[in-house]
Image (tube, rainbow, N blue to C red; front, top):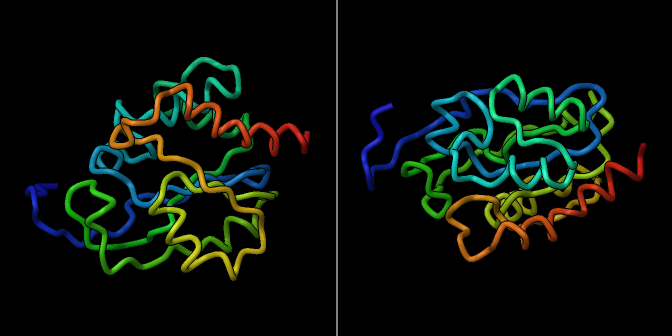
Length: 173
């Protein structure tokens, strides 16, 4: 991709939302990191704690391969996407995002059993509030980022805050 440090690049979201008709919750990030864009799937950076947190909450082994991650999401009725469809960004820096174009989330919600939305991190929450909240009448929970950039939050703290996901998933089973 040839992204230089401190240089803005206009990027269009490179992969589709992950969901199926049985998805019950939608987890929204801000925009895929450089590493995720390279791997072609969500939370592709090894230091991001997303997969560790979710697998711990669901009492499963952490999925490592792309196939394992997709199977985990399907089995647990979890949809993934991002609030930003395209933007200008420096590398993977959420704080650098400008000229954000919001994602269209309606198709995901109307084609599934989504009953709640979870925003992974401050930027995702801020942009969801700004662009999505009015058009999606669903409960929305703002959760601390699983990114390594959120180093102040320990894994145990993330798991405690993210446990609300289980309340929604288990309340519908």
